[in-house]
Length: 386
Image (cartoon, rainbow, N blue to C red):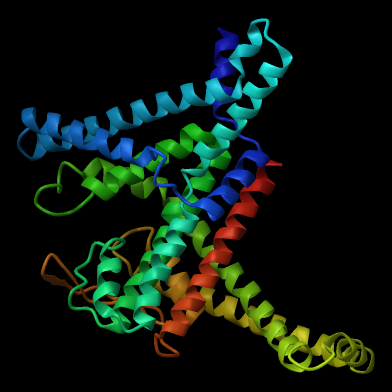
């Protein structure tokens, strides 16, 4: 019995190399269309279970009970399958039988590769960046029809009425919220509970996206999934705002130092000779420029922190306000505001303080900051598991 318990506990463990390689695979490949993504199975399971439960459960109370049953069934199946899969791939069950060493080595290698690849499906960095970049690129090309179409694939609001600024604002809001849901939260649960906990989080998040609405159909049935999703995102959402804050600091420092070196040295003839001469004669100025860049980065991070503190509770969600306020503070723009959902205007408060107009260049800067924040989250997970 102790041995069995040890096997189950091993399924919840994961190494730094697993997380690091999975994060890199996701950055390089994203989600291949040919691979049966686990979220598709989760979506099918949620839909079929909902259809069955609704045949027997009517009325507000019974719908609440049905929503709880849905959550228990989906979590139970996802967690069980993830534990079994982790045990098969991590514990090398074939080593208990006499086997050729070359075959054993091949099976060990393939199980390692397959496990890392499955772990990578819980992370969505590349898909997040590419989906929002597509919207920004179409706005830059002044193709608002395609921009609205692309935006409608990643947001739940009506997009038909949106002009350039509204499209960019909605894209940045989605970028900040999905940085938490699609990158930081999966990495957090991978770090503390391996593949089973990360897959369970994905199942809960998928349930919330399918049934966690406050409309007439899901007001009672989706209540349990929505509340559980809020609970699971409580820590990741706040971590996301911290990663964005550190990201804008590093981004500003790097941008200003790179700007100086590019303008003063590397865009001129004989850049290496110029670098040696300038560094030898003006070493004080080099350090001063670097220090000024650090101070500017610190100011931007401090501004981001203040906006988080001021606007973190302005969002209707208990969690989404943190990453959204962080990105608004990092860019110096206002996000949120009134939006149409199902043809109905919802008067949402603005988040952030506008210090510059929202443009394509600002949105592209937001992409870089969020990309850097995702990398910081990945590095943090690897370091924790070392």
